[in-house]
Image 1 (cartoon, one colour):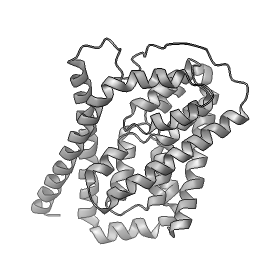
Image 2 (image 1 turned 180 degrees about the horizontal axis):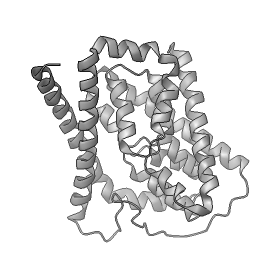
Image 3 (image 1 turned 30 degrees about the horizontal axis):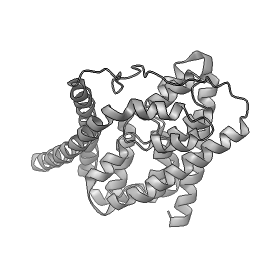
Image 4 (image 1 turned 90 degrees about the vertical axis):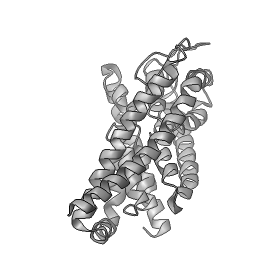
Length: 287
C-alpha cells in the first residue's frame, strides 16, 4: 500500500470520525439534561416498565444500559425491564448510522422498530415467567454516578458540556481507530476481496456480529455498524450484533457478586434472542 493511499485512508477516516463526533456531542449535551427524569419515570412504573425500558434503551448512548443495570441491582426495576433496555439499546450505533448519510441510513427506521418490539416483547415475557421479584417501592430515586455519563440533578451548567465533550472525544477516538483499521485492511487486501470474504461467510455473520456485540465497549457497536455501512455485513447480522450489544451495562451487572448468576442468565437470554432473530431476519431477507 502506497503512502498516497494511506493518506487518502487517513483523511477519509478523519472526515467520517469528525462527523460522528459532532453528532455524538450534540446528542449527549441534550441527554445530559433529561437522563435523570427519564430514570425516575422508569422506576415508578413497575408492571409496564419493560415497555418504557425498551423506549429508554433507544436513547443512543452507553449510559442507558448502565442506568438500567444500576436500577436492577438496587431492585428498583424488574429483570424483564433490564433485559428490555439491553435488547433495545445499541450504544453509539444509531448515531454512526445516521451520520453516514447514505442509502444505509434509512435502515435506521426498521432497526429501531425491530429493537423496540424485541425489547418490549421479550421483557414482558420474562416478567410473566419470573413472577416472584422483590421490587422496592420508591417515589423518587436520585441517580448516582456509575459512569462518567451520569450527572446529579444539581450538576453545574458547565458540566453539561464537559462530560459530553469527554465522552464524545472518546467515541471520536474509537471511530477513528476503527475506520483506520478497516480502511487499512481493505487497502491491503483490496475492497472487493474484503467484501467477498465477508459475503462468502455470510451464514456465520450473525453469530460473528453477536459475539463482537458482547464486548462491553462502545467500539463494538461502532465496528458492527461501520461494517454494515460499508456493505460487509447484512442487515440481519447488524440486527443480531446490536441486539446483544448492551455496552457498559454488562460490566455493571457482572461486578456485582450477589447477582452474578442472574447477570449471566440475562446475558445468555440476550445472546440467544439476538442470534435467533438475527438468523430469522437473514432468512427472510435472503442473507
